[in-house]
Image (cartoon, rainbow, N blue to C red; front, side):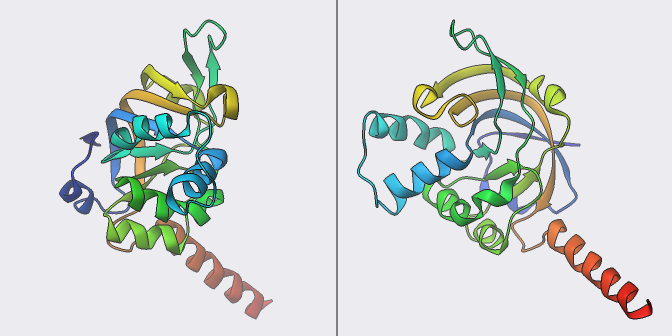
Length: 208
């Protein structure tokens, strides 16, 4: 397993290939549907005027995301009322929901990729080649195990407005286990599996 430290250099991302197993150490943030929509509408396409603490949050997360990753995760967090946050479960959520936003978000923040499950589509794959970046697949069904790699919750933004699962959690992680399934060279294991499955299905239908 290759160990990478966040922020990740562009040349390091380019050296990764699909199938590589990686342990990530450093600072990343979580973000799901609400966060991506908020980023796109308020700061990228600017179809919505900043409200409340939007600008403050943007200025806080922009340097964190540069060279870093966004994790598609709706965590279970203890100690929310007291502010003594502890991640109890931190499994990945399905990434394809963010496909309409992801490429633009990665470009805007100069990110090195995303973490999630299930893979993403052509727009995200193209962005991975341009930036460069990669898609890191986390293990579905291992939420408690993954939570153990969260050493510390450094901050949280939009908690009251978005709620616990959709908030922007800033995490310090240690040896977070992932697999590269989309790389900066146009390769996607998810596309390969889909093509192979389709070919097998067509073959079965032709012989039935």
